[in-house]
Length: 219
Image (cartoon, rainbow, N blue to C red; front, side, top):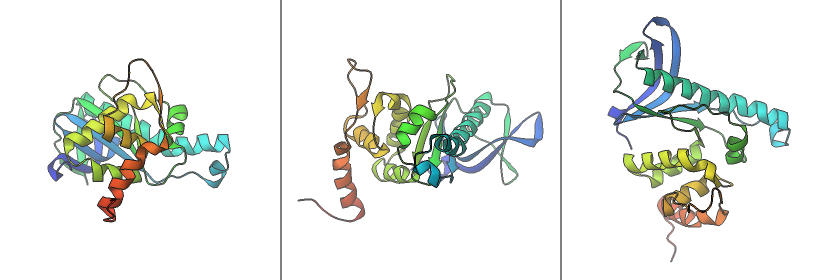
């Protein structure tokens, strides 16, 4: 989507004053006109005890899988915005374009039940004027985004809109959030401060995906 010239993988960041100790890292870094997407991927999944509803274990698993990834992405964003770093890939110094705004994104390789609810209640976010609110998505949503958001502008628009408005929407799945964005761009009335989304809102997206992936055409 973004072109190879705008994407860097496995970027290690070092302070200019200390080139021996790694200050941060990004699994994937995308830079589009000064806006950086900082992807941190995690393979940690919910344990069996968490799936049984053990609250302390759920909190622990969330901390290891999501909170740690968010903290890492946020710290990486701060380093990039500070503009006092040296970036390397495989120990080779690279020059990154100027960055003036960062969007930290945590990517999960496993399905997390009730992910939207866990993010709302458990994620401890930090504030920075040049860093967007946190985004946590799984690889399944990322794949759907790749299928439905075909240009850098569309992808960035969804990412930016979701990070700024996700707290206003209560949804059972992130697919519902993508479906709403595709149909109405997260437009919402100023008369309400929260919206509950029904699962049926993703029906049109389901039909689109059946046609695109499986070649099934609904007559």
